[in-house]
Image (cartoon, rainbow, N blue to C red; front, side, top):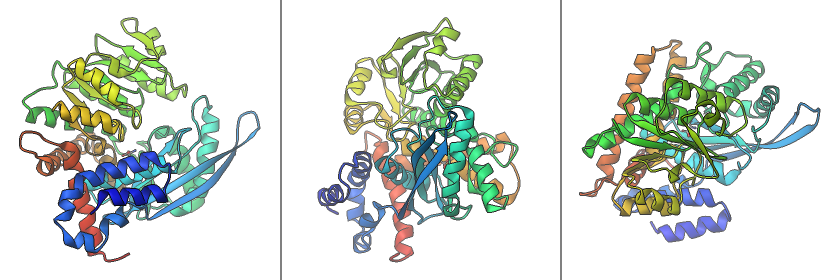
Length: 445
Ligand code: 2IT
């Protein structure tokens, strides 16, 4: 494989798709050596095939806002790879959504899903609909209009969407309601992240954050360190940040920062149950600001315009958006003595930030390994739906534990560089080999 040549070809075919090109480059760089030891991959042109989505579905979504004005957004579903199972991945509602963003996410999802040990292919969808400032009724009408277009492309054995940024339990509920009306079937397995009274899995809301902390526990344990007493800075305050804050606090760490697009909350005394519960209220308000946290809890302070990475911490957990932690942020964290960074958001760190952490030899793990507990628990939700049963919280949590441990082991095995575990390389190689092998065995399709 000639990484340079493949990247030049892709840049020519997909000019300006920066997030997608960044995600592909990171994976190709990591797998190059292993790939070249497998002439059968080269012969079957696995790399040339794996970097392009199977198909992209694009549609117009028109809906009426509360003032009676007609609004038009763009909707997408990117069915990236179905070598190891039906397409699976979240739906993102954010004003910056475009094909490049969803292609990067679908590409990452393919390898992440392979790491989970479960049979799921990779996909991603979404819209440039901006939930900020929208009423619940507007969100419902948008979700219904979105599903009116999408429903014929999805199904429990075809493609199973879930939530992502801007899409949580409320939105999944509205989308499922419309799906059910159109399909005239009670096909719960068509979406995951559902409500607990209609096919949702216990622990799914918590799973991305919980799984991330289980992964971090394994990383720390291997390095002879522990979570108890460690200070943690978390970016974001949504569903993923909430689960991470909850489990980190339960395990004895102190969450000293959360953040939003408006600035950072310094929280020197750590989290309480009340504070953690309030994060959910902030998210549900559709305002996308974190400042009210400091009005509600006087021992916390709000610093406008600053990121979570300006706070001195032992462990940094990006939980918000891609490329939210830059090279400059990485230098600031390192100067402040941070010794572990685990991406909980997808591609949360820029390539410069990752290079800085790896050069400093601190613990660093990529999103596709750390945050895989979310989609893994979606897989467990699909299993429960297919069996028409529901497992207890303890059963799901135990399976999630086992999956995160397996992912950690796979990363250590494939990313062991002797004196350093390169978790980026480990996750990319382990995920790639599984998908590539399946593609090889299924012929040229
Ligand atoms: O990025 C992700 O893995 C998710 N947004 C969850 C996807 C899923 O299908 O549960």
